[in-house]
Image 1: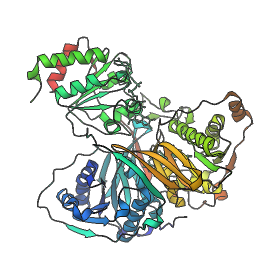
Image 2: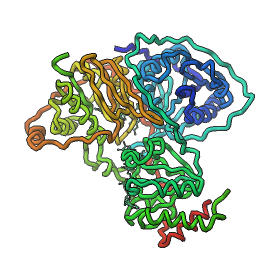
Image 3: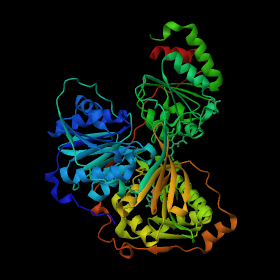
Image 4: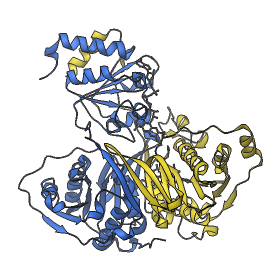
Length: 342
Length: 259
Ligand SMILES: Cc1cc2nc3c(=O)[nH]c(=O)nc-3n(C[C@H](O)[C@H](O)[C@H](O)COP(=O)(O)OP(=O)(O)OC[C@H]3O[C@@H](n4cnc5c(N)ncnc54)[C@H](O)[C@@H]3O)c2cc1C
Ligand SMILES: Cc1cc2nc3c(=O)[nH]c(=O)nc-3n(C[C@H](O)[C@H](O)[C@H](O)COP(=O)(O)OP(=O)(O)OC[C@H]3O[C@@H](n4cnc5c(N)ncnc54)[C@H](O)[C@@H]3O)c2cc1C
């Protein structure tokens, strides 16, 4: 049984905003920059410091600490040991727990990736911290920290508070908050912390890890997204996206079919995008999908079913087969190249 | 371990996602008349549990925390092939966030002497995905989340999982006991067999355990829950033009406008 240290008694002792900086093999997950940006605002409003926490191996050979400072951190805590590479939930959870118990942050932000959502509970449970999943708004209201998150597949927005326990932890999916530009020359402190995890005590072993280039669709101005209506053929979507200078995205169902890589999934359990133009082709418009693209400026729908809910959630739509409509769009833009911005 | 594994699968009762509507009069969320069903991702967890039993032997016990009528989801699991079911039900559990919910399930799993505990990726109502890692953390057990495939290694008391990670996958070996969260849609849940379904609905009676039975009566409910729901708003649909055009060229012109 894991020991429980109830931190609810000493709320006053907790301060500072922490951001977990997710990295794998020296490659930083973009969501870390998004959270440092949001965390900076929160820390300023609370009159506290922003602390970045990085775990990994051979971090002293990287410029990750300097990058964290340029992205807004006042202090960077580094836990540097081979036990942290590749990622595993038990060493990450144990190390993070130790730091939370000894340094007592008030707020902790963790990317809602498969990594962050995997280990966050191993910190929150033993410290009896509040852990709020998939926040889309984080705000100080009259001195109270409020976390808002969608529930019931996105039909409702719940406000979660954590009045008597610290830290107040949140996970946030990639793309929810914008990342700020790095500020070269910003100053901050870097501290290497004591590693409390012993390889002999770990319960898991990574046998194999296959990771390719990870597409990033969250910054795209133009997104051409496909769903089950693509019927296995995303080629026209790629062509249109290439022509317009955009990225291709998809529904979860299309990802599950193996038609496109999971990093391009939009929605509740995928990425949030907010492009100027979102083309939804062969997508029914399920609430879990809408949640990831609702902030798009203009939504275009192409669907064979005039009653598909996507039409209620689109600015302009056409009832038709995407395998006919998209090639016609491509033809139009090939003929009217001046319509495409350089 | 020659007599197989004690496999526990966690299933939750949720309002039918397709039935949760927004009241057009009040603009409020209407879920009171939504039918209660088993959380869709939990079908994948039950299927994975049954496949594990097929491979290593042992038993599958479904475990749910909820009101008395949540026995319905245990019947679904038993209908699919689970051997038994246990309901954790007690007014004391009311208002629990994921901290006490995972504590109660963790104690239930300990009581059942679990070697493997399975759950779904997340629920369709509050969808935190925090309960399976919470169970593992409360018991100090290993965990495997976002699992695509399981490969039992009974000789070494290990379970290997292929799990989805950003940009690819990894294979992780965990020591037993271990908590697994199956990725939604990663397997094809088997339909209930006719006889099994009749048994599950007519004859099967799950055991019910209270907070006191689990020894957690002071550690569950709203008062020990670190998070609280401070308010609920319906998510307003984003206003859109909703204009349907007849010709592709018109659509192209609208797109050109945005570019
Ligand atoms: C816990 C949970 C999390 C989820 N998370 C996500 C998520 O993050 N993202 C997500 O997208 N989904 C998610 N889902 C799934 C979601 O509920 C829907 O199942 C999914 O979005 C539907 O995908 P789709 O629109 O591609 O397929 P469908 O719903 O099958 O729609 C296909 C559409 O294509 C149209 N069509 C068919 N042929 C053509 C053609 N030739 N040309 C044009 N149109 C055509 C059809 O009329 C239909 O409207 C989640 C579900 C759960 C339970
Ligand atoms: C609007 C709203 C928002 C909420 N937000 C938060 C929050 O941010 N943080 C928080 O700590 N609590 C939150 N809660 C409380 C939380 O919903 C409950 O603790 C809930 O019982 C478990 O969480 P979940 O449904 O998210 O489970 P998840 O962690 O998403 O479920 C994953 C899997 O765990 C298993 N499981 C989960 N619950 C049960 C159960 N009762 N019985 C058997 N198996 C189960 C199932 O296998 C399931 O597929 C919220 C509640 C509401 C109403």
